Image (cartoon, rainbow, N blue to C red):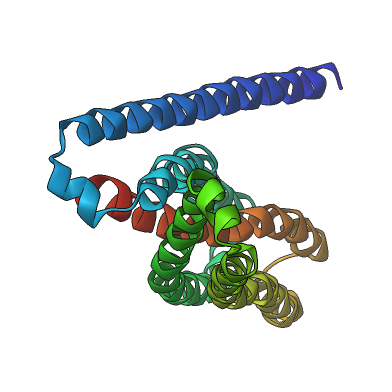
Length: 256
C-alpha cells in the first residue's frame, strides 16, 4: 500500500510540473507572438494600414494569438496524452493480458483518427470565416467609438446599431458552422470506445471458450480499455485546437 501511494504521489507531482511548464510555455509563446505582431505592425507602410482595418489587426492580436496559446498549451497536453500514454497502455495490455485480444480491440482507433482529421479539416475552413467575421465586427465597434460625435450629430444611432446587429448575426452564423462540426467530435469520441468494448466482449468470450485466456485476465483487460478512453477524447481535442491554431497562425503571421 505504501509503495502504491508513493507512485501515485510521484505521478501527480510529475503531472503538476508538466502542466505548469506546458502552460507557461504557451503563455510565453503568446507573449512573443503579440510582440512579433506589434513589431511588424510598426514596420508596415501606410498602404498596409489602408488595406487592413484596425479591427482586423486587433483580431489578429487577440483572438488569433489566443488560439495559438491554446494550441501550444492544451494542444501539447492532448497530443502527449494521445501518443505516449496510449502506447504505454497498449504495450502493457499486450504483455500482461493477450496480444491477439489487444490488437483486435484497438482496430477502431484508426477509424477515430480518420474521422477526427476529416472533421478537423472541415473546422479549419470555417474557422477562417469566423475570424473574418470577427474582424468586421471589431472594425464596426471601433468606427462607432471613434465617430460617436458624428453619429450623434447626424442622428445615425439607429443605422449604426442595425449595422452592428448584422455583423453580430454574421459572426454568430459563422460560429455555428464551426460548432456543428465540433459537435460531431463528441459522438465519434463515444462511439469508437463503445466499439472497442463490443469487440473486447465478443472476441474475449471466444478466447475464454477456447481456453486461451482466463476470465480473470479478460476482466482485467477492462481496466486498460478504460484507460484508453481519455486518449481518444484527447485526440479529438488536439485536432480541434490544431485546426483553429493553424488557421490563426496563417492569418496572424503569414499574411502580414
